[in-house]
Image (cartoon, rainbow, N blue to C red; front, side):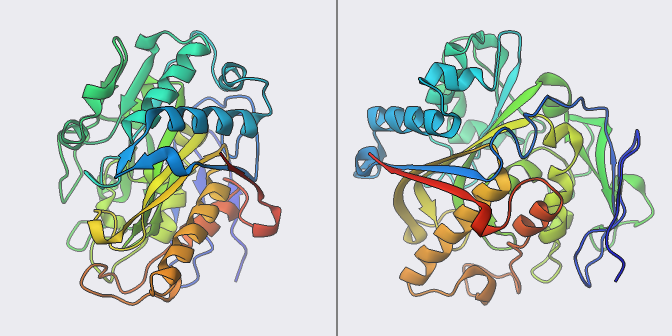
Length: 372
C-alpha cells in the first residue's frame, strides 16, 4: 500500500488516510492563519496533567472551591507558571476574542459543568481579556439553553450557536462559512455523492469568523460509534455541519476517519489552543446520551494542549472503568440495548496522532498525576 501523502497548497488536500479498507479522501478549503506554536499539538506536546480531589463532588453536586483549586493547580502544572494568571497569559492576551466550546449532550448527568466553565472565564479575565471578548458556544441553540449554559455566564460574556437544533440531514449552510470546509468521499445513503454540499462539512461561523482562539471544554464520556467522545470529538462534531454521515447507521460508521479529518482543518487545528476535560463525573457506557446507571464519579480534571495525548489518557480511563464494571474494553465490545453500533471506532485518536495533531504513543505521553 502506498503511504499517504500530505500536500499543502493554498487549498489543502489530504490525499488519503491510513484506514485500510475504509480509504476516504479528504480535501480542505481554509484561509486560517497559524497562531505561533499554539495550534495543535500546542505548547506542550504529549503532556497531560490530571488533578484529583475527592472533595470535588459531594452527593452528586460539584463543589466550587475544590474545583477552583483543581483548575488552578492543573493550569500551573501544565505550564510551569508561578501562578494561575501567568499560566493563562501563555495562551491569551488583551485583544484576543476567545471561544469556549462546551458539551451539553449528556444533560443533565454529564455535561461541561458551570463550576469549571466559570473558572475558565475567570482565568481568561485575569489574563487581561474583556468579558465581552469571551464567547461560549455549542452548535445547537436549543441544547445550549436546555443545559442552562446561558444562565451560568458572568455579565457581558457572550454566547452563540450555529443552528437551532439537531437535524438528521444537516446540510443547511446558515450558521456556517463556505470558505472553510472539509470534503470527504462520504455521504449518507440516498444522497447524491457528486453534490459538493453532500460531501462537505463546513466550519461554523463561530470558529471561522467570531473568535481567534478556542478553549475546548470537553467531558469524559463513552460513545457508541466513536468509542470515546473527549477532546477530538467535541471539536469534530460540534464545529461543522453534515456530521451525521460519519455514523448514519449502526453499520455505516466512519468516525475513525471523519473525526481526525475535521479536526485537521486549519481553522480548527490552528485556533484550538487548550483542552480541559471535566472528568469529575464520567460516562463509561451507552454514550453520548448519559444514563444514570453508567455514570461514575471520577473526581479528576485533565489539562493539555495536545488533544491526542489527552484522548489516549481518557480512553484508558474509560476502559479501566469498563473492566472494573464487568464490561469489555471499547475495542472488544459487542452491541447491546444501550450501545448498538457493530464496531466502535476509538482508533480516531491514533489516526489523529498519525496526522500530527498530537502524541499518540503511550511511552511518549508525559502524564503528571496530582492528588489534592
